[in-house]
Amino acid sequence: MQKYLEAVRENICKICVDSTDKGKCTLNKNEICAIEFYLPQIVEVVHQTNSEYVDDHYKILKEKVCSDCKTRDTEGHCFLKDDANCSLDRYFPIIVETIQKVDAGKI
Ligand code: SF4
Ligand code: SF4
Image (tube, rainbow, N blue to C red; front, top):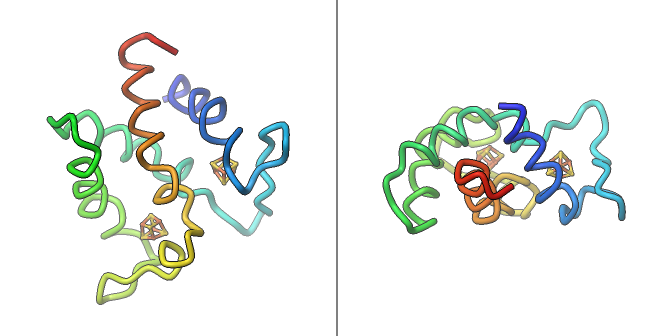
């Protein structure tokens, strides 16, 4: 999992709106990054989704990760997603690409 985490830090944290110019995360100790928190499940989703389309990965992500996330209400709404405040939702296409590049030995 470490190689995926390092790739996330290199490829996502550096462009994340919650990071400094140098890619250092600015979340405080009471905030959780959904990418880091759910990374094993995200990697599993990418590995299990047999599709080249990111929309297909996204659909499975919603079923396997968001359905268990406490931020989501009983009707399936997530205020963090609606406010573009979930890093996982915000950067999902790049996350999929990053995981696939790690698997291909490209990064
Ligand atoms: S919120 Fe997550 S993706 Fe963004 S900088 Fe922090 S650890 Fe990286
Ligand atoms: S989009 Fe919402 S429900 Fe899904 S992981 Fe992010 S915070 Fe959780």
